[in-house]
Length: 368
Image (tube, one colour):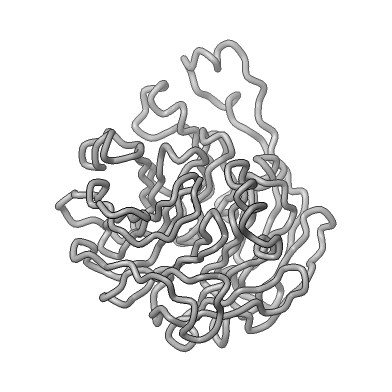
């Protein structure tokens, strides 16, 4: 994996579907970047193979489609792949994507279901746990997957015996908050820290090992509650890069984005609960514009409501109001709406954006 600044539009990867699409809520690459999952505002989730230039654009693919139940409780940004890339979690269910074509169903079979009050599942600690939310409470669920037998290997049937089971190992209650607005945790690395943002405008770091709260900071994203929090993504493919070009302090960051002052992206040092910098070069007055770290940890990207520049990329080494901007990605006319979701490819210097117009756009470091 190279560390490179993203600035060039990859037109050959564009989603060219002409019909009107619902707004995009979230985008997630699977761990080996061979598929991408996209959730829409109507609570549909679609999975496409990558790259589009080789396997065809979304309109040419026979994609996997999931309709999410219990829509009113779903955090719009919560979607999670397992470390194997075979399972995907959203709503209050976990789906086995690897079985979708083998059991003759257009929708993948459920591998795990939670109670309707427990939603927004996210794999944690290399699939040993799944995190869920229930209003202002965060649950840590231990997962017990069934042993694989001959019938399950042949994939001839799918019934309750194939379902995983869970038990709640610990819970964190945010008593002064009405609900959790965003949370994040790492799955591919064995980090036991969890970050939550709540409606009482606090940012908290929880420790799944001790069951306690490491720290809690009020107004961590200004005068508004953070609507997106994000840890740097660490995996086996970028560990060497991190050791070569990035100070270890950059790994110990968490980002929080809010609509404060028309758009605020704040960085916090998880070791000391101190501010590590702020960025204010993007426009975010109303929508839930999410943020993502580059795999090399030199840059951080965030969506923007500025129709002249769809997404903004900041240099993590330059913080301050109006400083640190290294690229403003063009908001192509086909986007037809603000850029609300950005996601870095975990293996290659590539960025994908999603808009309120339902369009996907790809960018890399080379001209096309």
